[in-house]
Length: 416
Image 1 (tube, rainbow, N blue to C red):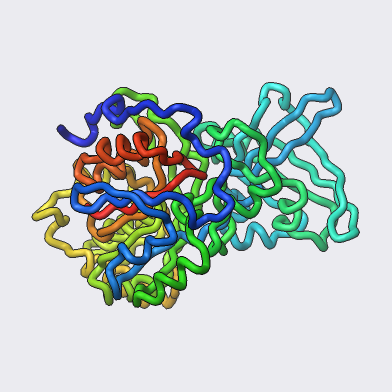
Image 2 (spheres, rainbow, N blue to C red; image 1 turned 120 degrees about the vertical axis):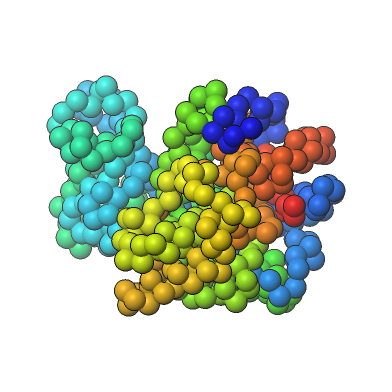
């Protein structure tokens, strides 16, 4: 069947609420690990992951850090308004955004929007012993032109030039744990809902496959001669967006922004563009790089915006032996390196909407560490594509052997 006509109902399974892990285990690396290797399924404990990995390989992690993106304001009428930061609007660069002082703008989802028709909302608080008033204004004019879907343009301003926006979020913001946990954020989540290697602020959801890693596990992986590279993909709330159309052709994938350093691309070529990916976000980043490199073959002067990978691009290009016009992954990645060198920059900034589903042929990712995903989700489609449709064997085993599911749940190592 053509990928676009896949029926999402065929990717359903019964997930009892009690199998959804509401909290993580006290020790990250003591979670269960399912091993799927060439069609055979077994299980172990996560701290034994290194022994299942090949020596002298390349492992790629997503180093994004979850921000305290949820903010609440109370109107004089008593109505509670939630402002959920989705992506920076002015400035658009994440790093610059968090350093901004005085004012900035974000595209946001608004909770209880019907109660906030006009006027600004305010909150007073102290940071580092200094008083500050934060004001937010819903900009309907810019929302009509600049926002996408359910996101609205919101202007933030504050009256203390000594305080930057990152510091404000630390005090006013709340960590946005997944909606399916059906509970309030707790203080412990600030630590447990971040990977131990998280660095770059910008996500509104954690790259949850990485939550199992500890410094001990990372050292054991390094001891096997496995090199570590990091990419940045800021996970958006769209990762929880359910597929509501009968066929996936009717589902619009959200855009996510990626950052990849030149040395990561060089290392990919060193390992013949074969990588072990930690998490589906690393998968989408790595696989998107191939299509960006292909674009540069015919348009070597493309802009970062023109390198954006659209949802259906992998399925619409002419293929030859699984490759587009015979372009190998090594060739594509070299095109990206040459493009960076020509521009005199060390870092690639671009975006992707890539949808990976059965019918997709993986170019770079050869092994995958990932959690167990929601029924009828695009993440489950990605896993199915990776294991050549054998996802149900994996999920049946996990359900029958008391594995914990979703963000705070257990993990799997997939080797097709």
